[in-house]
Length: 380
Ligand SMILES: *Cc1c(COP(=O)(O)O)cnc(C)c1O
Image (tube, rainbow, N blue to C red; front, side):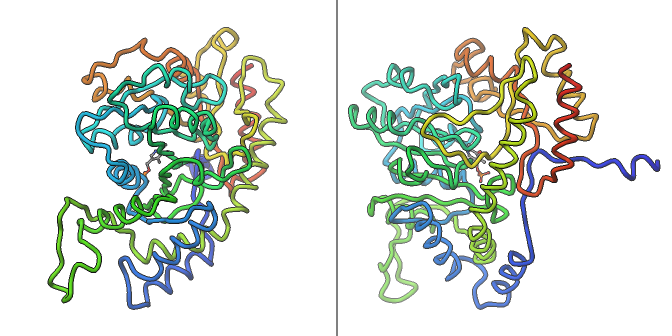
């Protein structure tokens, strides 16, 4: 029993909340607004400035952001949307929400983002958009994706749930795709509890998303408040001012959060680089990654006991580990759409051999040392 008391579990990811966050939320609670109000506007302005986008709409989750991005892009029934299979399921579900067909694609073995050459082969007359995912914080190959989008007249959507603050070729994530969706779930780089945002430079997209976030109510359609008009099906995807207040104070520390994540990433690299049979997350040339997670890959040729045994050993040592991700095509919903094991060998091989070990700004050095020691022990 006594032992249990001192047994500490290190999570794989954790939010960083301090007094300024708490004060910010308290001030929102004592203001006149609770739901969408002036704080949401302020948060949107701050975020747009940081990611160098013209327009920003805060919404209730990253998933809602992807859903509205698809609607604004005019994606609808029968359209095809190319999505990497190695991602969180929401990256593909958003296509299904709007009646479109998610066309899954394999990833590049080096930076684990969509394989651009394979994506090109999947383009048909019905392809309307490509959703790139910035996996673990690493930008997709946006320069190449832009070329592809121009060549085939496709819309680019960036699922940037994991990459706020990341850069590709010195330009921030949020400035590459036609529409970029962020998430502020607690495991992400900044949090609002639940929350998300879409940024764009396109005024029409922006106005459409503002409208659909709030039931499809036409702005300024009413001479009297009761006289509003709705000509399209919208949603209640609003963020609250309470959440936005948290977002505002979190955004102020985005730079610090990222440098902390990057220094932990470097420290893992320095201490684990000599371990045989281990592949560490490496920054692709031209990328600056905010490192949302730290997924390591085990070479099954070297590590005979296998990923699952290592996973169990680390869990038993009190280390919160995860697997990011079971590829989308292996989920039952997507198997029902016709996908099967063997469809995307790169993502499948990665999935079978990966473990995410803890990475978040408040991870203590001594805890990181402990994790490093346990990983080495387990892989010996
Ligand atoms: C977290 C995440 C989402 C979903 O964001 P929510 O805010 O949880 O809805 C979508 N895509 C990716 C890649 C994510 O990591």
